Image (tube, rainbow, N blue to C red):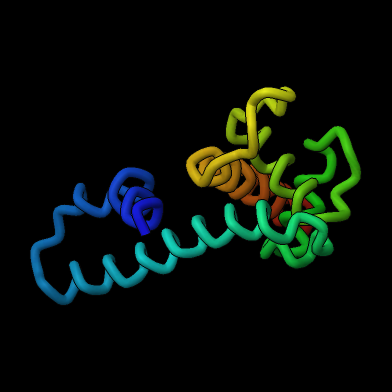
Length: 128
């Protein structure tokens, strides 16, 4: 529960939103809660069920395809996907570093989204 609130407040900046109406604040809060829950759930899944297939990590096929070249190992399990994503977020993956946390996974996820956006833009340019 504490990690959920930390993800909501620190990671997603829920308190920094300067919305003027209650309806907008409620809508933003609902969306941010879903993202915070997904972040904490993702961290738990990578720790509790690391041997599930990579597709269970919750990434799209495009995201997995873009992430593959970023990884030094095959992305066949949730653990491998989490480590590759954490590497994008700054996790060094040394023996004593421990498993990546939700903040590192979040930073990696944001980097991956930028890479995917670049791939999508390049595909649009090639289609023109």
